[in-house]
Length: 398
Image (cartoon, rainbow, N blue to C red; front, side, top):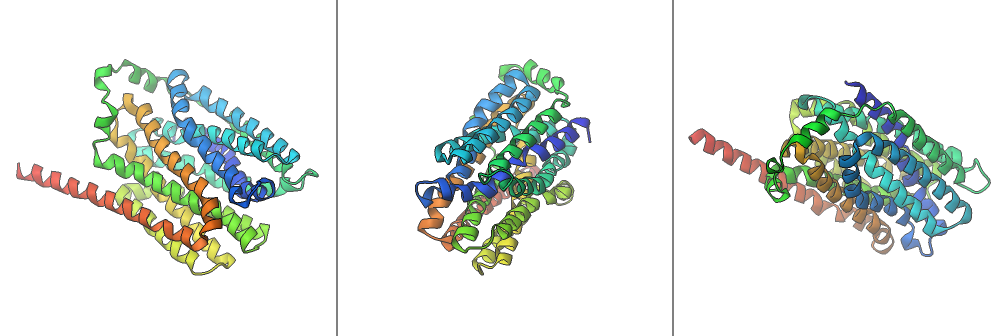
C-alpha cells in the first residue's frame, strides 16, 4: 500500500479514539448533567449533528485548500473539543458539554474523508483494500479510546476531566502524524482541468440505481448502528444497572467488531462482490435485533453489539466502495458531500431520537423500529439487480 494509506491508517488510530470515549462517557455524564433524563444522550447526538452540519463546509474547504491542511486543522479542532469537554465536566455545564460534542463532530466530518483520500491514493482495483486498511486504524482506537476514558476517569478529582484531556492528547498526535501526508496534487490538477461541461448535474448522477444502493447502505448502516449503540450504555448502566466495567467491555467489543472485519472486507469485495457483502451486513443486523430481544444479560448485549459492529462494517465499506463507480473525478467532492450529508444526517436523527425512544417507548420498541429499514435496503438492492439483469438481457438481444 502507498505511504499515504499508512499515514492515514495511523492518523485514524489516534483521531478515532475520541469517538469511543464520547460514546462511552457521553450518555453517562449526560445523565448527571442533563436537566431531564430524556436529554441524557444529547451530548452523543450533538457529536453526530456536528458531523452532519460540517460535511458541506469540509468538502468546500478541501476543494479550496486541499486535503492535508484541512486534515491537520481537524485534529486541532478535536483537541479544542477535548479541552471544552474537560472544562464542561469540571464546571458541570451541560450546554458546554454538548458544544464540545458538536466541535468533536465537526472534526469527525474531516476524519470521514480519510477513506476517500486513501482510495484516491491507489488504483481503482485496490480501492476496497485501501478503505479497509484505513478503517483498521479504528481497531486501535477501539482499544485506546475506552481504556483512556476509564484511566482518565479518576485521574483528576472531578470525574472524567482527565479522560477528555487524554482526548486532546490523542487528537494532537493525529495532527502530527498527518504532517507526513503527501497531498495528491495530480488528482486535484486533473479535476481542475476538466471543463464544467464534463461535470454532470447532481440530478443526472443520482439517476442511477447503484448510487442509491451505495448511499442507502451507508445511511442505514450508520443510522442503525448509532441508534442502538447510543442507547446501549444508558440502558445497560442506568436502567439495567450493569457495572461501568461491563458496559465498557460491551462498547469496546462493539467498536472492535466495527473495525476488525476490515482485515478481510477488501478480500470479500474482490471474491464475493459488493452486493453479497452488503446482504451479509443486513443479515448481521437482523440477528442483532433478535439477539438483543432475547434478554438483558451482559452476554446478550455483548453478542448483539458485536453483530451490530460487523453489520456496520460490511454495509459501510460496501457503500464506500460502490459510490466512486457512480461519479467522475471532477464530480467527487460534490457527490461525496451529498453522500456524507445524507449518511451523517440520518445518523444524527438516529442519535437524537435514541434517548427519547429508550425512555418513552423502551428498549424492545427501539430494536423493532430498526426492522423496516433493513427491508428498505433489501428493496433497493433488488431494484438495482433487476434493472441490471434487464439491461443485460437487452444487450444480449441486440
